[in-house]
Amino acid sequence: MHDTRAIPPLDALYQRHSKHSSYQLVHPLLAPLLGRPGDLPAGKLEPQRQRFFASQLSYAGARVLDIGANTGYFSFAAIAGGAAAVQCYEGNADHAEFIRAGAAALGLTDRLQVQARYFEFQAEPAKRHDIVLCLNVLHHLGDDFGDRSLAVEPARQRMLACLNGLADATSTLVLQLGFNWKGDVRHPLFDGGEKAAQLAFVEQGTRGAWSLAAVAVPDPLTREYEPLGPHNRARNDAVGEFMNRPIFVLRSRRVSKA
Image 1 (tube, rainbow, N blue to C red):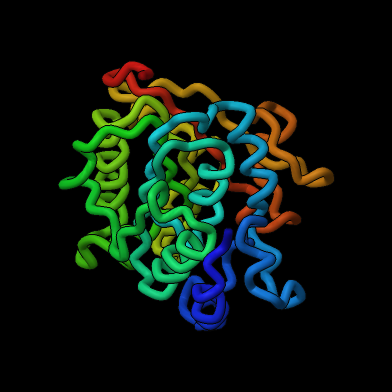
Image 2: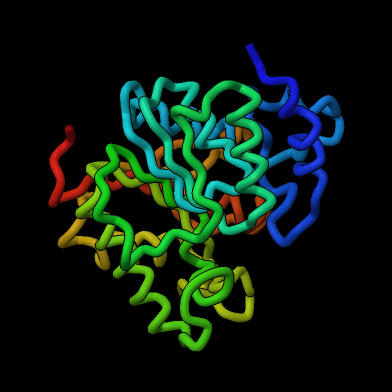
């Protein structure tokens, strides 16, 4: 049974505005508890991304780490998919409290643990997880977290160091990156905002630590994710920046699947 005492603060937390508020769709487990379905955000293809994840991995019995969880869509999706334990990190205190309140309302506090801070890539990946989600986080290095004195190229190299360090902590990494450093179009991370440039960055920069199992982008018409290929490799400005961001599924060369 849901803890109804958690519902009023859950709703109030969701209404607080910040840099990344109203970014992520509220997971169906939580949406009925908010009471105002018309006020919920459209999101960033969360159901479509989750369907793609489900085609590539299984949460059943898994230990999951969600880095940069926002309001927790993918943390709750992992729970709904049968994950044994989910640990999520969220540097926005209101968002972290929203996830915590949601877990309490749903009676999930024994399976979903929340850290109200940014994940420290260089210090924390020693704890093993079966699956790590790192979705639209690393292009904020030097902005939301990390060294603000970095220039673009050192930031790119730091991002690769963060990714490669995770290969000691998990067998499977699901990755998504923005094209612009700190979300600023004046500081592109990849030449021309091209998917091929981002693919080369990930594939070549992580080769010793990871093997690339899958890469996908959404179909402009169905919005469902499909494999990256000759027909969808070019940038499509008509669909907006987010729908050009590939999703990468990486398998560790260092950690075998449990």
